[in-house]
Length: 291
Ligand SMILES: O=C(CO)[C@H](O)[C@H](O)COP(=O)(O)O
Image (tube, rainbow, N blue to C red; front, top):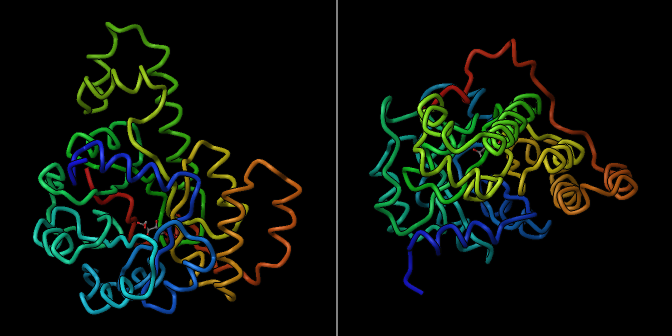
């Protein structure tokens, strides 16, 4: 099959279903993630909790670090670029990463336009807070969506809000008569063809993971209960007291999300989770980046 077609990119994302994708900043963390059973790792300079603390401009990770991570593991390696930063994306594609995250966790490079992801052979994942945003990103060529949550807070409340919103809107679309879809597409700022597809499929046309603020195995299981296809975890693992234990527990929780006895067992010995932040106290809301 030809490399980089829409079908291949979308199909690749489907292979991550039921799995955990872990943010990592170096080879050591990447190996912890791989050993824990992560389906992929996401290379970045700092996990979101540290990006939040450091302030300033957060950019694509250094090429040396991404190479170090690519050399360390055999699972797919994703890496983040700033929203709208076509050059960072071209560089990562040339480097040969497996997936690019056009991410609000980094400082946006363009305050109006996202990358036209159809122009790339490498697949992209993008964040969304509602159905309209998800479909706009898919229209631009995203092969995978992750609900945004509020990254780096250890607080799952925004992840829950965004996943519930997307799922509610999908249910709403399914109850609409066909003649309502054009107005609804206009209302949410999404192409009507994609709204029609959502109605037909009863879900997003691409895989939808949960992200941002997942800090315990119970949080990860909760996101699966709400309909996520899998989860991204960053700070929740590497800002916890025992990352290897927490990473393994996250993977098991996503597998056994519907088995309370197993979840109990998984949650018994995870060490101390990362500290959490109240959303009302935040100076930066990363979720508001992107349009
Ligand atoms: O954009 C992302 C997906 O890789 C974030 O890094 C992810 O949301 C992690 O957030 P957190 O640090 O709260 O787990």
